[in-house]
Length: 314
Ligand SMILES: [Fe+2]
Image (cartoon, rainbow, N blue to C red; front, side, top):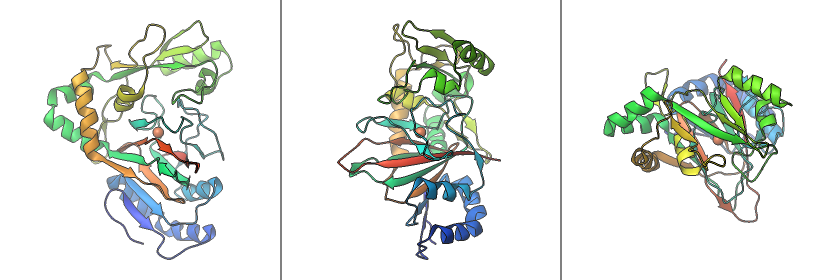
């Protein structure tokens, strides 16, 4: 098996054609790959016979991380479960770009690892851009120390509208009942209070929530820092919230974020992006604390099917 830099690429050079053989081989390699992931940030496994969500389930389970299910997450995206651990990445329409983000960094519950699996690549487009967030933040801090300090010291607050009914056409269309794993308004309010959110109900039955102050920067075990947040996704892709068209993202003290700082971050991130051009059967393991991901738009008659499995360190 060979490898390169970011992401590390592990190819099926032994020509393993049965999942049982893959799992036997993987069992001897997992510890080594977990160690490599800590510094590399992402590993792509290419050419293995991973053809179904079930194959992907057992492939990812071989790493023995803890489960992080869609049901228990506070993800705002509509997703469909294939197995208890494997679900669609995002049901947003093909022409919608999902901008760079750390998975669920806008919530107090986020996974440490994200596995992706391409069951069927798009005819055109549909790559998953990956961005080393630690490299981005180090560069941003060097070039704009005052802006970087603002993010680090003030943190962020996210305002999110959760619809009464699921809306699959939106990247944030998961209903409030599903998002919060509750059935009633009272249970929703109890859950939000426990999580430290504030909220209000809109006339259309939707729920507008504001997170407690969330960190914008995360210290990683090796001493580096990552820009662990949803700033780019919110700035580039999220719509104003509610009838009053409020900003979905502010600093933790409620102050607006300088538009120039956001534009600079967006353009700087482009320098660090590596688009992962999917091939059928690819599995990518991404350290969600170190690496951001997104989804480029796609087109063509071939269905793009990229599924995910989230995991936590145990
Ligand atoms: Fe994501």
